[in-house]
Length: 238
Figure 1: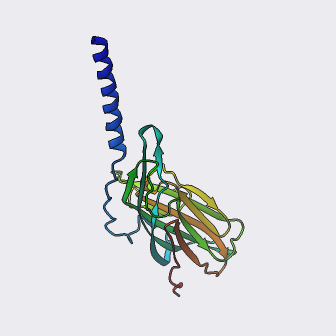
Figure 2: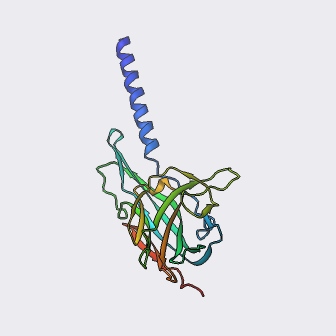
């Protein structure tokens, strides 16, 4: 009899732990606060660069559902992406070309989500990865091309942090590891994440050398299965 009571208690304990874990995992994510200013830049140009153009746009995202078979639960998150691109001409003493840098500040906001049993049909937005891309026109000269991205989080460091190989200073946080993956080519650099809910703010930069006197056109493209947006900065000012 005593053994039976112990067994029942153990089963009850395991069941209670299972239901507790399932309840915790199945909680719909709380909506994050939107950025105070979704057009504020987390990065600024240094070393005498001249800001020559900028533009902003936004889109929405919805992650692929995550299934945990052991807990018989499936969860998903969705939200918005707001981003601005800045174009700067860098000072140089090269008579054979000019140097430009494009910088994108992207704000990833989780707005909601859902949870259900894996076998339950859910009427949700298209799901998949989300990406930020910087596209440009005008051929790159002398194979001078570099692209960089970092995720940011709040920090208390007094000294600004500098992305490797860039001429920008971060003003909106400190770099952290992220799940961004990069695909770079001669005329575009894109960064993709399967889990936008893991990100808060990301910064993306491209540096190029173009022909002397050329004014390359840059544009930013935000894409996800939920939608696609692009922003072409204003024309260059004389």
